[in-house]
Length: 127
Image 1 (tube, helix red, strand yellow):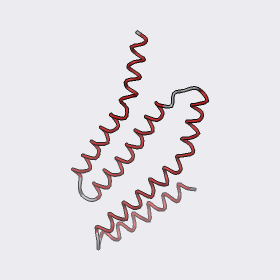
Image 2 (cartoon, helix red, strand yellow):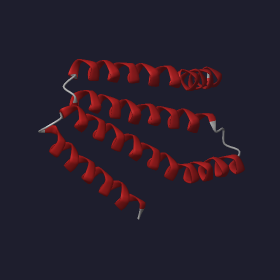
Image 3 (cartoon, helix red, strand yellow):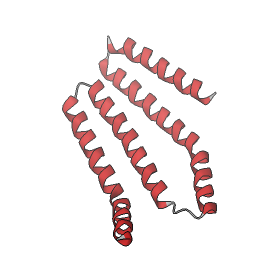
């Protein structure tokens, strides 16, 4: 049911943005950005309980949660970066969109460094 609300919000915002773009293009950008932020907030709220459940099950099994945390951080960075890059493209700033994507890729790399070190240490331990 929550998905239908999100899709309805996206559709309504898209129709309003198209309508306002003819008269005041800056309003279309604000409508699109507000709808995008609302969708991100709704998705994050919906993901909190399943993520907590997965973490709890990993703890029960004795699995290190750090790998899962790195994956969640990378996923979040990817989604937010994509949202910002799309907003930049929508406003006609494709150069800024590509720079935002580059920054997101670098941030994912930096976030994943501890995981890479762990994998390397494990591999060296097997030798």
